[in-house]
Amino acid sequence: MERMRSARKMVLKVIGVCIIALFAFMTLIGTYQIVTRYFFNRPSTVSEELLTYSFTWMSLLAAAYVFGKRDHMRMGFLADQITGPARKIIEVLIDGLSFALAGVVMVYGGVAITKLTTIQMTASLGVPMAYIYVIVPVTGLLIMVFSAMNAVDMLKRDFSEKGEAKI
Image 1 (cartoon, helix red, strand yellow):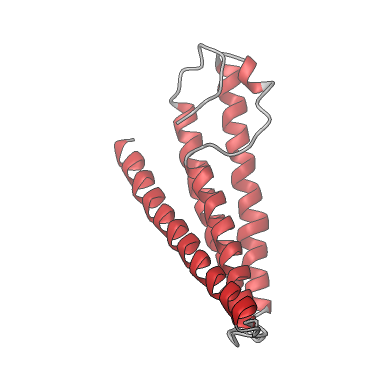
Image 2 (spheres, rainbow, N blue to C red):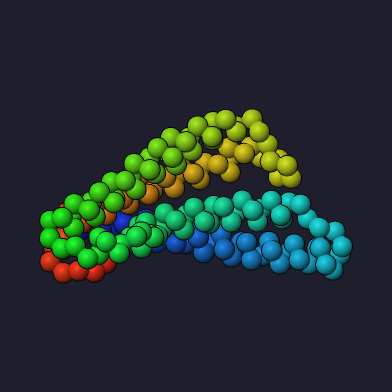
């Protein structure tokens, strides 16, 4: 159990650093875009594309990060009022559904769309779109791993009191 917590902590730290780096990169590219557009009257299409794809990557990585901390959005108004074994079942079911959704939509669908876009190139950057879409199955796998970890944590938890189940 302790290994799982330390592994989760390490993966969350790596994801957090990636998110921070992407945000800093987006800030620099956004500043560059503003300077080229308003001071030199020559908008940069490369910076526009980089911002769009960086924002997409950052958003998906942030979603995986939130799942890892079990702070994802859920409608807990019913589940948070239940205690005992029923609550444990509901919490594990929530994590199981998250696992299944990430597996089907993000991993299976993400791999399919990544394969489809291997020959399609981005307009300004000239790189295969598969490089852009590869983040979908990667974050899907991360969400699946975190959902499984969360389910294990919920199985070991005592739900004798009402309230939100945090890690």
